[in-house]
Length: 137
Image (tube, rainbow, N blue to C red; front, side, top):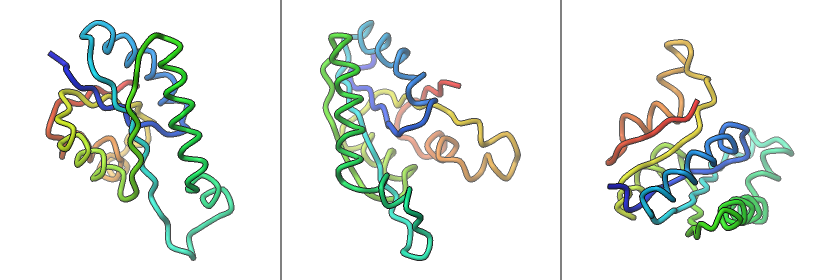
């Protein structure tokens, strides 16, 4: 049923909490797991020191390798993809490219207001995705 599962990762607590569900689904369906990290490059005026550090190639590589190691400890092999762009669009584009059957995402709960809901990455992915999206609160 879920041959290929796409799991966008970032450094949020919600992503770490969703990892257990991802592992369970991948094991149950014997799915191919693809870990995706999307770096959104802010303009030079918007960059803070933290954004420069988190947006660096080394930080993204370290994040993906850490996620890959987490799944490897559970006996799950994962492919890594790193992209740059608007997260919601990149997630959906990659899902289409790899023929994902399911996207699993953590939810930060930022969409609790009407304004926040329309702007959230999660909401955009739900509306644009070429496949089902499982949101882990």
